[in-house]
Image (cartoon, rainbow, N blue to C red):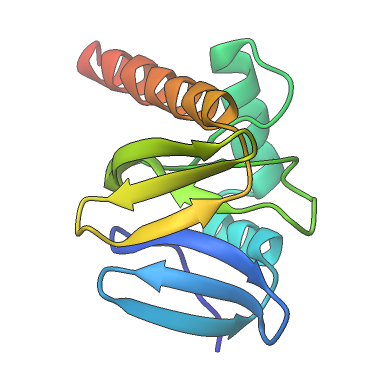
Length: 149
Protein backbone atom coordinates (compact mmCIF):
# COMPACT_ATOMS: atom_id res chain seq x y z
CA UNK A 1 0.00 0.00 0.00
CA UNK A 2 1.31 3.44 -0.92
CA UNK A 3 0.29 6.43 1.13
CA UNK A 4 -0.25 10.09 0.29
CA UNK A 5 -0.22 12.71 3.00
CA UNK A 6 -3.64 14.32 3.35
CA UNK A 7 -5.70 16.54 5.68
CA UNK A 8 -6.22 13.58 8.01
CA UNK A 9 -2.51 12.88 8.45
CA UNK A 10 -1.19 13.59 11.93
CA UNK A 11 2.32 12.13 11.80
CA UNK A 12 4.54 9.65 10.00
CA UNK A 13 6.94 7.70 12.17
CA UNK A 14 9.71 5.27 11.24
CA UNK A 15 8.80 1.71 12.15
CA UNK A 16 10.89 -1.46 12.20
CA UNK A 17 8.05 -3.74 11.12
CA UNK A 18 6.81 -1.93 8.02
CA UNK A 19 9.08 1.08 7.45
CA UNK A 20 6.42 3.62 8.58
CA UNK A 21 3.64 3.97 11.08
CA UNK A 22 1.17 6.61 9.90
CA UNK A 23 -1.20 8.27 12.33
CA UNK A 24 -4.28 9.54 10.52
CA UNK A 25 -7.33 10.91 12.35
CA UNK A 26 -8.32 8.00 14.62
CA UNK A 27 -6.49 5.29 12.69
CA UNK A 28 -2.96 3.94 12.33
CA UNK A 29 -1.49 2.34 9.22
CA UNK A 30 1.65 0.30 8.70
CA UNK A 31 3.09 1.36 5.35
CA UNK A 32 5.89 -0.35 3.43
CA UNK A 33 7.58 2.93 2.53
CA UNK A 34 10.00 4.95 4.63
CA UNK A 35 8.75 8.29 5.95
CA UNK A 36 11.01 10.03 3.42
CA UNK A 37 9.62 7.94 0.55
CA UNK A 38 6.10 8.91 1.65
CA UNK A 39 7.17 12.55 1.56
CA UNK A 40 8.65 12.21 -1.92
CA UNK A 41 5.63 10.37 -3.31
CA UNK A 42 3.15 12.76 -1.68
CA UNK A 43 4.88 15.78 -3.21
CA UNK A 44 4.78 14.10 -6.63
CA UNK A 45 1.13 13.17 -6.16
CA UNK A 46 0.32 16.85 -5.61
CA UNK A 47 2.30 18.00 -8.64
CA UNK A 48 5.85 18.78 -7.55
CA UNK A 49 9.00 17.13 -6.28
CA UNK A 50 10.23 16.97 -2.71
CA UNK A 51 13.41 18.79 -3.75
CA UNK A 52 11.39 21.54 -5.43
CA UNK A 53 9.16 21.98 -2.38
CA UNK A 54 12.17 21.95 -0.07
CA UNK A 55 14.05 24.51 -2.17
CA UNK A 56 10.99 26.78 -2.21
CA UNK A 57 10.65 26.59 1.57
CA UNK A 58 14.37 27.35 1.96
CA UNK A 59 14.05 30.42 -0.26
CA UNK A 60 10.91 31.68 1.49
CA UNK A 61 12.26 31.15 5.01
CA UNK A 62 15.95 31.80 4.47
CA UNK A 63 16.59 28.54 6.33
CA UNK A 64 18.99 25.82 5.29
CA UNK A 65 18.17 22.68 7.23
CA UNK A 66 15.16 20.78 8.58
CA UNK A 67 12.82 23.00 6.59
CA UNK A 68 9.09 22.36 6.62
CA UNK A 69 7.53 21.34 3.32
CA UNK A 70 4.26 22.38 1.72
CA UNK A 71 3.08 19.02 0.41
CA UNK A 72 -0.10 20.46 -1.11
CA UNK A 73 -0.45 24.21 -1.63
CA UNK A 74 -4.20 24.76 -2.08
CA UNK A 75 -4.75 24.12 1.64
CA UNK A 76 -1.17 24.87 2.76
CA UNK A 77 -0.76 21.26 3.88
CA UNK A 78 2.55 21.68 5.69
CA UNK A 79 4.58 18.97 7.39
CA UNK A 80 7.84 19.38 9.23
CA UNK A 81 10.67 17.00 10.14
CA UNK A 82 11.87 16.39 13.69
CA UNK A 83 15.44 15.64 12.54
CA UNK A 84 17.34 15.66 9.27
CA UNK A 85 14.72 14.59 6.67
CA UNK A 86 16.80 11.70 5.34
CA UNK A 87 17.59 10.35 8.80
CA UNK A 88 16.13 6.96 9.64
CA UNK A 89 14.82 8.50 12.88
CA UNK A 90 12.98 11.39 11.25
CA UNK A 91 9.33 11.84 12.17
CA UNK A 92 7.14 14.07 9.96
CA UNK A 93 4.37 16.01 11.70
CA UNK A 94 1.44 17.86 10.15
CA UNK A 95 1.47 21.47 11.36
CA UNK A 96 -2.28 22.10 11.21
CA UNK A 97 -3.07 19.07 13.34
CA UNK A 98 -0.82 20.00 16.32
CA UNK A 99 -2.88 21.27 19.25
CA UNK A 100 -0.16 21.37 21.93
CA UNK A 101 3.20 19.97 22.93
CA UNK A 102 4.76 19.34 26.33
CA UNK A 103 8.24 18.76 27.65
CA UNK A 104 8.71 15.28 29.08
CA UNK A 105 12.44 15.47 29.77
CA UNK A 106 15.56 16.88 28.09
CA UNK A 107 15.27 14.68 25.02
CA UNK A 108 11.58 13.80 24.67
CA UNK A 109 8.48 15.85 23.91
CA UNK A 110 4.81 14.87 23.86
CA UNK A 111 2.81 16.10 20.85
CA UNK A 112 -0.95 16.37 21.28
CA UNK A 113 -2.99 16.56 18.10
CA UNK A 114 -6.36 18.24 17.55
CA UNK A 115 -8.16 14.89 17.97
CA UNK A 116 -6.32 14.30 21.29
CA UNK A 117 -4.07 11.58 19.86
CA UNK A 118 -0.63 11.80 21.48
CA UNK A 119 2.81 10.71 20.37
CA UNK A 120 6.18 11.09 22.02
CA UNK A 121 8.97 12.36 19.80
CA UNK A 122 12.62 11.89 20.76
CA UNK A 123 13.60 15.55 20.40
CA UNK A 124 13.88 18.35 22.92
CA UNK A 125 11.01 20.73 23.59
CA UNK A 126 13.10 23.58 22.18
CA UNK A 127 13.81 21.70 18.94
CA UNK A 128 10.13 20.95 18.43
CA UNK A 129 9.19 24.52 19.31
CA UNK A 130 11.64 25.80 16.67
CA UNK A 131 10.26 23.44 14.03
CA UNK A 132 6.66 24.44 14.75
CA UNK A 133 7.64 28.10 14.66
CA UNK A 134 9.40 27.68 11.32
CA UNK A 135 6.46 25.77 9.81
CA UNK A 136 4.01 28.38 11.14
CA UNK A 137 6.08 31.14 9.59
CA UNK A 138 6.03 29.34 6.23
CA UNK A 139 2.24 28.98 6.52
CA UNK A 140 1.86 32.70 7.33
CA UNK A 141 4.12 33.86 4.50
CA UNK A 142 2.39 31.65 1.94
CA UNK A 143 -1.07 32.83 3.04
CA UNK A 144 0.13 36.42 2.79
CA UNK A 145 1.44 35.86 -0.74
CA UNK A 146 -1.80 34.20 -1.82
CA UNK A 147 -3.89 37.04 -0.44
CA UNK A 148 -1.90 39.50 -2.57
CA UNK A 149 -2.83 37.73 -5.83
